[in-house]
Length: 218
Image (cartoon, rainbow, N blue to C red; front, side):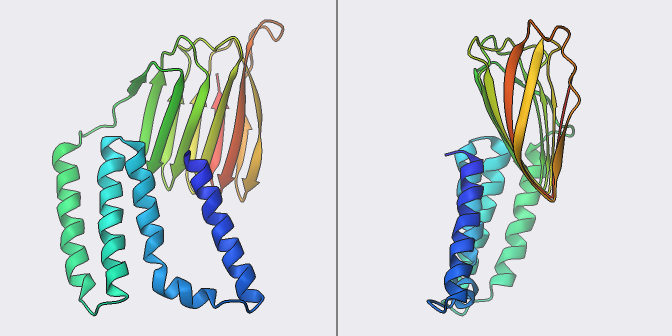
């Protein structure tokens, strides 16, 4: 399941919860006060599903903290005394095993999938049959270099999600970009100029920007 679907489901759940609260069917504020750590757990699961090193480490941290906070809602323990040492341990591990500069990841598959949360990703695709994929940046940034791709005969479709973050994409000059989506206190900018509008491949871009932005250029 793509990150866009997870984010959409989160908005739907909160919308339904507040709607039922306004209708006096249930006390959604009380439910949130008891079960809000599940949000951290869900974020952790999403990051673990992404299966990259940085997202796995961050995802496990969200799971541990969310689990401790959830247990604290039912058992009287000093969670603060446990959370901060755990955070320091994870930060130390990230500093030890991460590299000083963000390296560009080489991508050769037909679909690209990138997820960044409080971090950044830099992907360069060399796919010979590019069909699209998903790029998500939440409180972070993502750079996607597509200048070396060959778009599939059927075209390609990219789903972009920027939530308090930014996404920058560079495409070849033989590509025409058709962009649409939903801006929520955010937006996008298409700076592409194909060389020959009559002889180009097409990439369809669908954007969801929430207090974020997307830039597409040659």
